[in-house]
Image (cartoon, rainbow, N blue to C red; front, side, top):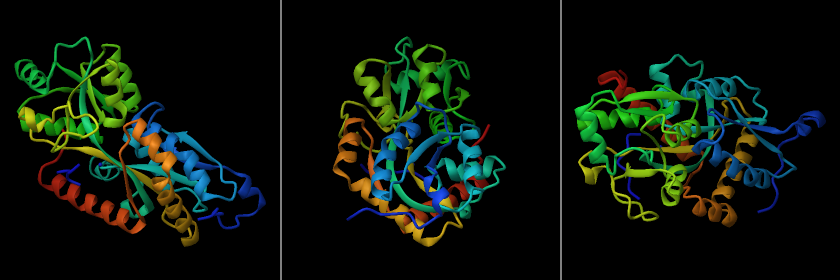
Amino acid sequence: MTRRRILLTGALALPALGARAQDRPIQLYVGFAPGGNIDLAARMAAPFLEKHLGGGAQIIVVNKPGAGGMLMLNEVAAAAPDGRSAAVVSFPALVTALHDNTPRYRVESFAYVGLLTDEPYTVFVGNGTPYRSLRDLVEAARARPEEINFAGAGVGSAPHLALMAIERAAGVRFTWVPTQGAGQALQLVHGGHVAGSISTVSLTVRGHIQGAHRVIAIMERERWDKAPDLPTGIEQGVDVAAGSARGFALPAATPAPILARWEEAVRRTAADPEFRALAERDFLVVRHMDRAAMTRFVEDQARAYGEIWRTSPWRR
């Protein structure tokens, strides 16, 4: 896939931390409620990270929803730099929150140890809605400004920004219903409480195939080879591409040996045949970056979104 997106051997043991510290599990924090795309990716990756960290590492996924992931990021940024607190970080959410909120963290608050996935978004709607295409949805929104509800994580989150990009491109207005995560938004769509939502292919395509909801557009430059029947938004006259990249970060002051072991564990997870088979099954797009590449990626995203914010704020 090509993306026109603004910037989406042997066992390893952690360095000696003292007997009591070694008994403590590693807490892998997710800034959203259970059941969403980021939560599912974290729970899929956790056993493989345990295996490749070695040394009897135990990882517990901890959900800390709130403010589009910002509350969790604040907590991890301030955590002890002992390798026992890590965050699943999502982009562009981590950098966009810096502009529309007042987080206690900065880009420099974290050491970025590896990107694992990078997926395009989809626009999907409930089966009870009349919308069979993105064109249908846009026409309805043009006729009834702000009457069509879409749900998703927080205000100013990456899905919210993607919807606002659709609004600008199509000259329409929706109403955004903030939730604690993609899982809750999915429930609202299935229950008929909102018309639709925006989330990644790994959360939505299987449900589309199974008839749980309808994906009416993929927010990518070209059709996705795993679901070639899904049209892009661009094909339907809405020139927008967007998605979500996810990786792992630890507090910036974490010692280099611990960061190196995490970096290697992420690399091995991305290359693990069993993990890749599970990712293929669940439509999760694996795209690995090492620590240096991910750090450059984060810095590029921060610069790009900072410039956009200064020239054209993405908010109502």
